[in-house]
Amino acid sequence: MEGGKRITNDELWTIPCEWLVPAAWAALITKEANAATIDCKVVVEGANEPTTPTADRILEERGIAVIPDFLAMPAGHRQLY
Image: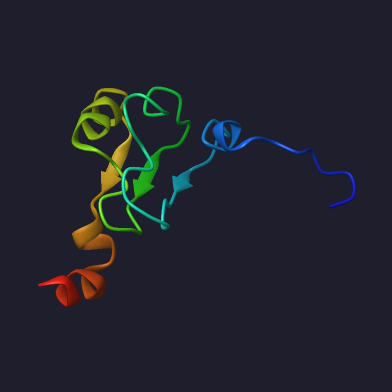
């Protein structure tokens, strides 16, 4: 896009936002990768388990709310069982 700035995948996770919706695949947010640097108020899990349990604890300690996948996309979970 003209006038846009190219960023890396790692930089994407640090852009300030209100809502972050990881909706591609599992384990996108991890302790090792980005849980300490994500800059949002709410994470809405739009994929199956995009946040690892350890990352969930880090986000909670940082005051970032997480709407779990089974609430954010219940129809997808019904199909899994």
